[in-house]
Picture 1 (cartoon, rainbow, N blue to C red):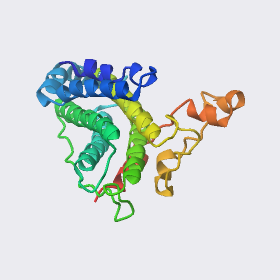
Picture 2: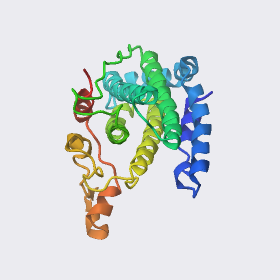
Picture 3: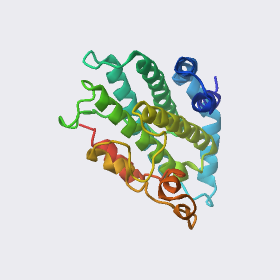
Length: 274
């Protein structure tokens, strides 16, 4: 099964834009989750990458006009893998925690999101392997940040960190797009994953009774410890045009997600690495 087709189906706008009832929405998420589970099979991913990704990498290494070399590509994938490791383990621990009470309807949503994250980890590991690069080992995570958070005992804190992780992922993937442009196969897949992460973020934000998008640098009732996730989102100038002039600062800033650099994304992830 082609990973691009699977991820493309996961980014169907109908999932979050059609006027569905909550039960219908959850039913669609469940259907997508079944397809994503198949995407997590390394052999399937390896088959996809053995042709397209390797061929594109060879092209990158032989065309001097391309700005980004293999090391930039592999660094971008390693960063993405670290973030996906973090999300994958976070949802797995949350769903398994006997000390955390997740409402039944919300639990179904997180079960599907967890399947997506597992598929993303499998894809990124296979992508790195196809490039001849050893995927980084999964770090040891401390989701309490030395006791500052209690995400597996307090559902509201679980939601807060879920939103922070998803919003970080969206900005980080966008920030690394330039570093994977030399490999069209991986670029296409990475952009698909970015779109999936954006839908995760929108869904989790709405579960916290926030808007599905970020306005200014306000995460929406988020603790100060998450400020780095939203720093820079207040920007309203795009391609030299100040969108606030025409639409107001909130709408202007919400129109575009700002990037996180590799260093910024790493700094955020490092807070949760033991």
